[in-house]
Length: 280
Length: 278
Image 1 (cartoon, rainbow over the protein chains, first blue to last red):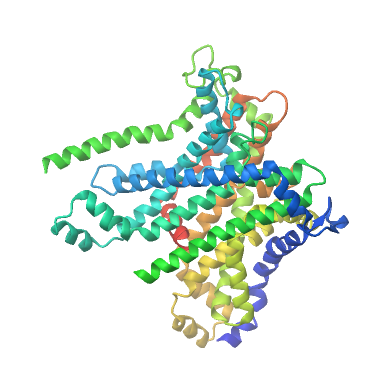
Image 2 (cartoon, each protein chain N blue to C red):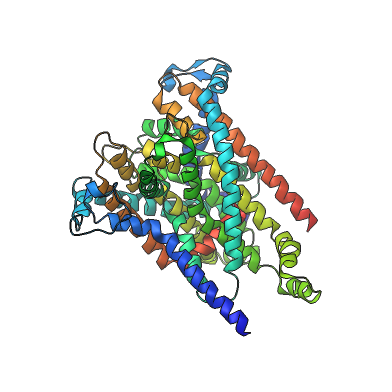
């Protein structure tokens, strides 16, 4: 069978392979290489060693954006997962209309980041106006606004994953706990949550990486106002590339740092899920 | 038993209120899209009155002045085109690399998995250069970029499914004299239908809403997607026409809601499948 198939390799693999090389491999390799160069257009690239990285780490706005993003990722992780888990628990009870409610809570997830940002900008501006202030005046207004926005967007998504997890808990385990006289609360903490650990790890890491990669919403809701204080890492990298000439190399170095952080989080997740699988 | 019934009724009541509150932001935008532009920022939470009512004027401005319908058209074209190309090419690729074992296919698979974790910012600058240089900065060309950048997730999900298909079926087809192409299209493809739907939905959601990739790749003087068009309306210096922006937001949301309501079950299933694997 393999022999017969190998002759067809060009038809099966080549289209994807070519596009993949063009759309991913070349940009990625070039990106890593250019992070060690100074350039404005690739043709005038000049090797400068680690100086781009040094400049990136010296950039106070970039360092601020890192802490701002990290804090954002942690806070959004907690808020999204607590609410999503609670909703999933409530909507798996015997109740009329659970399907309609699930549909409603999931819906914002399908709307794009730019559109979401402007929908909420209207609302936050309207509310803050009553107190004679505005979204762009304080970085923590922007922070709270972004938290509300991404919660609205992602709670439904995580809820779906939690519901799938809850439905896969075998009924007899629950029944056994019930017969043993475990109260509702004890069942939740001693049976449901331990059985749900795989879903919980997935959702936690999804929300952390989403938090780190947030771009569209940040651009449309606050655009970094006031004076780049609500700028998150992805937006900071974008602005370094396209907002400051002579900083393209630094932007690429920041992008590599960003990439390393995101991959690091992914590796931790892989470790954790693997170790969980062994225990079960 | 009676007590339980009461709890469930109260629960339904609470969740009805919660559900209405949840879609409120969209309703508020909808309401404001019918107001005259000067009244929108001032009092966004008040229903339109006779004085502030603007009928469909905002929608007409958005369509005439900002050419929103052509943006919708390009977005549909790019999304549908890319998703179809991705589904066809990556499923064929995935079948080949799972069935033919070797250093090359193994390496390609790992590279695909690796590409899934790379954030877009890492490649955005160089990707836009490559797209410019190879003249892929059109809605037709961007399909190839999407195939390349979206291949990782799609190949990964298809590979996961191909592994679960028993080899005997395909062997029987080949034994009966089918070429690998025929085997793929008349045996493997029908079996993989659920995965096609899941992958298709995930990629549709991504490409439809994507802002940065088309923003950097497309020739913006000629082609804009909806997200780009809205960003242009808001980001342009000078007066922002809030009425037109509200109308544009609604025009952007409507196709999504129609899509969602018409294949809701598949979407939720696809999301659950994608999350567990990704």
